Amino acid sequence: MTTPVVVTGLGVVSPNGLGAEDYWAATRSGKSGISRVTRFVPAQYPAVLAGEVPGFVAEDHLPSRLLPQTDRMTRLALAAADWALADAGVRPQELPAFDMGVITASSSGGFEFGQNELRKLWSQGSQYVSAYQSFAWFYAVNSGQISIRNGMKGPSGVVVSDQAGGLDAVAQACRHIRKGTSLIVSGAVDASICPWGWVAQLAGGRLSTSDEPGRAYVPFDAEASGHVAGEGGAILILEAEAAARERGAKVYGEIAGYAATFDPRPGSGREPGLRRTIELALADAGVRPEDVDVVFADAAAVPELDRVEAEAINAVFGRRGVPVTAPKTMTGRLYSGAAPLDVAAALMAIEAGLIPPTVNVEPAAGYGLDLVVSQARPADLRTALVLARGHGGFNSALLVRATD
Image (cartoon, rainbow, N blue to C red):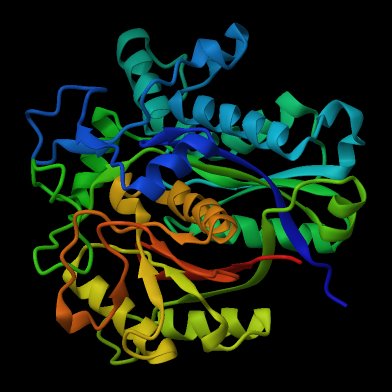
């Protein structure tokens, strides 16, 4: 029998809320965190808007000794991990070190760290590692810092599959729990709002160049023209359900099913992989399409990609067959942090019986989606599907559901 894996703790750092409670209060009310970039002067760049995490002062949350060896991404992740562990009622120092692990994801983060290393390289010579080496090394730092800070010596790793990576990391964490690890810290936090990171994101050709915060990121809208970048994400505490119940933990919900595919080569004439990903995730969870109460969309805000996602959802659930939402219109796309934040939102939506809105969007009729816009929609929710896609063809789908 497959071991049920549940979420017992949430740690959220988001452009529209610090902490799970603040994030959910903002999200259910449609409060956006998108505004003009403040972390550097963006005037010389074609894109000037971002979802920045406001009010986060690292010194208020982390020991001063950690600050010189970390950048914003890691500081946000460490704080989110602390909040998630506290929310789960877990004191790592009281648990066997090898019974705890950390599986996270990374995508665009590390640019600030690499940028700082480049400055050192230019100013002080070859005693510093190259930018490439520092960036490659940084992928492991985020997970490693959480492990070291909390004395976790079990399974550890970082998944790199762009924006799909957050779901892939959670799935990998579930595999380790089913193999016997008691607790895994998972999810992702990304942050690359710095000049080097900005140039890299602009090179992808998918950043919105609108300077209107209310209309810059509008997926499934006739005026969709790219996404707004953001920083943040969510860290989740995963445990075997039986163990969580035994210690009296609050259970947000179960990770019920997962699947991942890769799109075929462009020009091959074959169907994109997202529909198949959804079907495989449903099969993994043992649920039918009619059992799914809401879909949290990837919401690329690129017309061709929006069309592919809408067609996949309609093929599985029927036109307007299931409510669809994209609360990331309030935060921007957080790269590997986006999907774990959607998982957190889905779990809180199930608990509240409320589908958060997709703000500022005027749905184009041609997509055929029942998109929840303007304001939250009350609903009896038990099962939610979260979708994520990564640049280059990654597709991931994860189902969460309420537990009795």
